Every structure is written in structure tokens, then in C-alpha cells.
Length: 137
Image 1 (tube, helix red, strand yellow):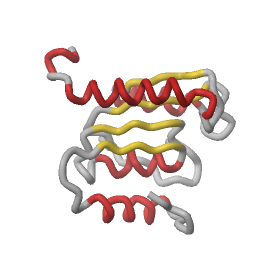
Image 2: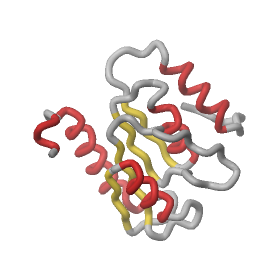
Image 3: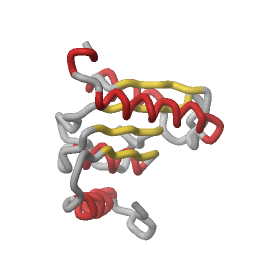
Image 4: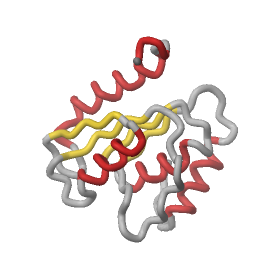
């Protein structure tokens, strides 16, 4: 999604929901920073199969608070220890609250130096979505 020119998180969420409403099949949302917040806030509205977030802007001042029970699908978060924009502790808090999988990597907010690892983690996340539930316990 291209959110250029849309500053309001709520308007970004509305744009994503509108774009995805007529898609068929399983929907996996992926987002980074504010896009991670938007993906997370939209996931249950879109009945997403899963959410993969990178340095999501959750619990950040100025953003609307996420509604309770916002997550109703599997989620994985990747965050850099050296993130100078979104504190990694926010992702820890969210992962603890919602039982999301969390990977803390040696990277900054953009995680550019961790692309190969992120690609691997995303592939594992997608494979995990297709595993029978009994194998996940």
C-alpha cells in the first residue's frame, strides 16, 4: 500500500480495509513502523490469517490506542535492539500481552542489515501458518 499523503493512522487503516475487502483467499498482512501499526489495527477487521510486523509503531505517543483484543491471528514481530525510533520494549510488551512470536535482532529501525534474516523469518512464519494446529503445541 502506498500511504503517501495520508498522515492519519485511521485514514490509512480505512484505505487498507477498503483495498483488501474484495480480495479472496487467505490474507497475510505485513508492515513496518507505522505500516506495522496499520497492519495490526486492521488484521481482525480483515480476518487476516496472520500478521508479520517489523519495528511496529505500537504504544507510541500520538497514535490511537489499539483496541483490546486487537490480535486474533498468529503474529510475528521482528525488532532491532538499536532501534532509535520505536523502542524495542514496546514489541516485548505487545508480544507478552498477545503471545506473539518476537525476534530481537542486532539492527536499527530500518533493519536493512538484517534483510536476509528477515526473509528467512518471514518464510518460516508463512510455513507455520500452514502447519496443523496440533503440531504447534
